[in-house]
Length: 113
Figure 1: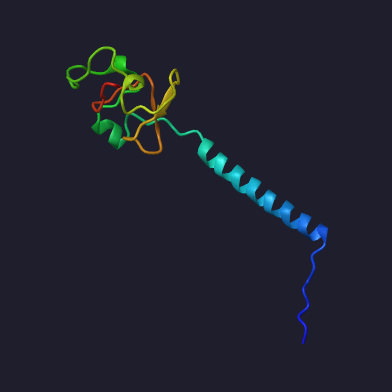
Figure 2: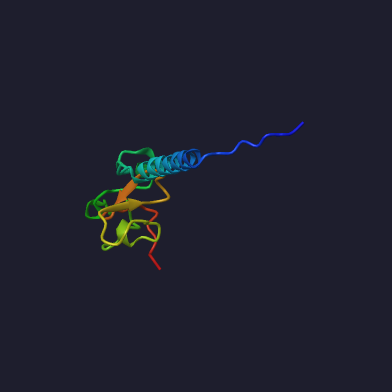
């Protein structure tokens, strides 16, 4: 008994390629959309933020409550800040999924190397 080999026509190969390309483009678009969603700024009343004495504006830090604070310290010049230079905000590993204000401050501030 002979086994018959099914021969694909060029249009079947093209259809498969188009489907695969469309699936790849769709998955990529979904991934980019998920990554590019704007993260919300951490609120000063957030439990983690309150525990660290976070202020969105470093000039409003109560020096009596936060003796570690020194003028000129801000999230933008902290070693933990992951925002781009000149950005209004950026990610901080202390506040997962949220951004901190570049002009902000918290008690975990560490000098950028």
